[in-house]
Image (cartoon, rainbow, N blue to C red; front, side):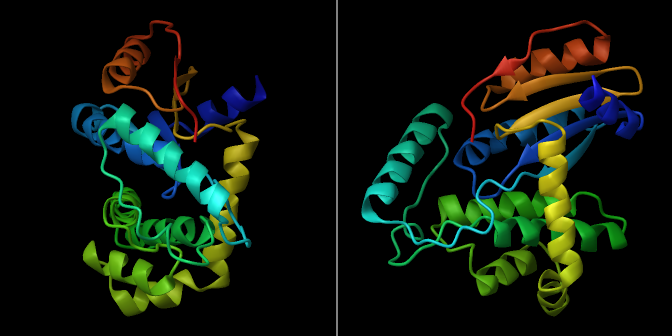
Length: 233
């Protein structure tokens, strides 16, 4: 398949592609699993974050009915994952569930980190943004909040503010969105492991660490295994 060939071409030598959005509730539920993956498989797999663009460029504020549906969905994610959920931001009058600014902030952090040869900054920014939105109830559609989050992980606040508002940052963010769609990824979180010889879906939607671990060990051993499929987005 062309999509799998694209993954193989990008794998050097073994890569785990992680498609996520900082304002995706299932991605927040999946965050502890990602941390364990980094701890257990960091020496064997390069974890590459691709920003998914769950709701980019949303412009309409949440109405009462939609807000109720979202909060009910969050309750479901909380029950399945054990992750904490604050509701302060989403209950704010006029809240627009636009995930592009948060995605762009993570892409910007990733770019600044690469300039300093620190490939982990993007993932740290993702986790800090998720923490701010879901656990602390902060509005991560707000540029000032995102700048504070960036500073909290050690980025220079002024440098971040300049970079995140640039045309380059916007273009880089949409390249991630296009990459996500071009690889046929529509459920978040998604994990796909790839090497020069194969590409294997590891998880499509939320899955437990045990499920993901079994898939990754099968991949590293060269043993075909069924994908762990769970709740998307």
